[in-house]
Image (cartoon, rainbow, N blue to C red):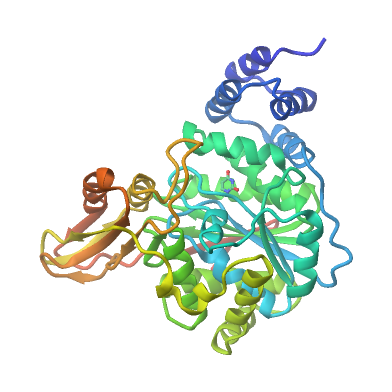
Length: 443
Ligand code: URA
């Protein structure tokens, strides 16, 4: 006899291990409508509290992966490599790195997600480029990759559809911060896209789903083990997400900051993480022997303008309005611009990524419920970041929104996200360590 949805939920609630057959029937029924959103939400919360062991996590990933098809990219020459982040605030690294790596000759087939919890999503950011299509068919996906060496899409009915549906629920039900759920979500997308190797940016700190170093390392090791089981070489960096990356938090504002970086503007923290990850991708893709060589090649792709040209080419191929890349100031602007001022003289001690992430949802840059539409132009510009000297009443951050009704709340949240200290704080390490199947390595 097959188990009822409530029996499977109860089993996980009570801390038992689900069999691959149970996971398969529950998730298949969810896609068919036989399991309702409220039952899946209860299941996700049970997994959040009870976890999954390694075997169960692998079986869960396998079910998520096989909810759709696995793309065969063997017709595209080269070692195909992708990168995925476990989720951050202001984390627009994928937008900068994919064109850099493709410009260096490593094909990048990228399947990304939307905003999740307090973090932003590459898909929402890409869709802020008017006309940009993230829902390509598999045929188009392969064609764009073959023509440009880079393609950026979201899950479709064909690729990891179970993740697409569960991800949207997790976003708004407080069930994101779970190692097996994150592993199943990330690895099902990545294993489906036809890659040969994967590089992961595992975030740590207040704005990360795993705030502690230990849990971040555990997440990285789980992701690497799942990758290995499915025959994909997976390398991870553990990077800081206690404050947002770069200055822009939102969708269009992050895309605009990414163009700026591809034009050579130095946004130090953002580019340090980008170059580290692109170097690992070039090494996995056989275009650099050492990390230093990978970093140099990546920098050259930016300085020569090849990476920006690649981004333009991909945007054009996927239907996006290239005008906005060339003239970002022509993009629509928000009705309200609110400045958050420093309460004192001193130094920025903290700029809390979690608080900024939630404030960005309030102003329309993220979703509070699954049906919410994103306002692509809404965002927060962080003019000051940790370690910066500030004067009393100097602007720390600027909020861009059309939602007058949430502006005061957002302003308060952003103000509270900052702490102003009399002395400069100790600089934090941006990249903590590198992990692969052989172990943990110093960076
Ligand atoms: N990114 C994903 O794609 N899924 C998660 O669960 C977290 C980050």
